[in-house]
Length: 183
Image (tube, rainbow, N blue to C red):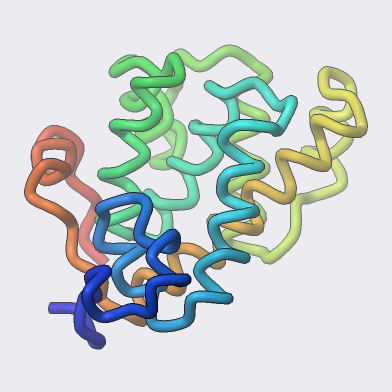
């Protein structure tokens, strides 16, 4: 159960109804601070809709963050969103295998993206070797967008975990299909 109540439009001033444009648990908690909700949404919408980074690579990076953080909300939502942007079941299985130190079927660039996300989650920053590897395939803009994406989702999982935001019933099937490892 979330640590704060889930808000509805009836709980908000009319000028703040826009912060509930998405009917998900995350926005219903963020609505406690409408200005923060708008700022949060602004970066999230840039990442999803305006970043020039390949959408599949973006989603693999976000999935890596969610998987390592053992964040059920993030993981379940981005398995679904990942499907919408070209992530396959094979990609998800390969990401899990690579995270567990097993052979992976991901292509070299995707492996480097996942490794970079893993390093930023575990070590706060990406290693020089991984950054250099990514720099061979990604422009400065794409690389910047990748790092912004990973950093933002590191913050997202901390917010989700601290607020104990519940996974909506429609997303539970993704947790059943791809359960997170035990803590």
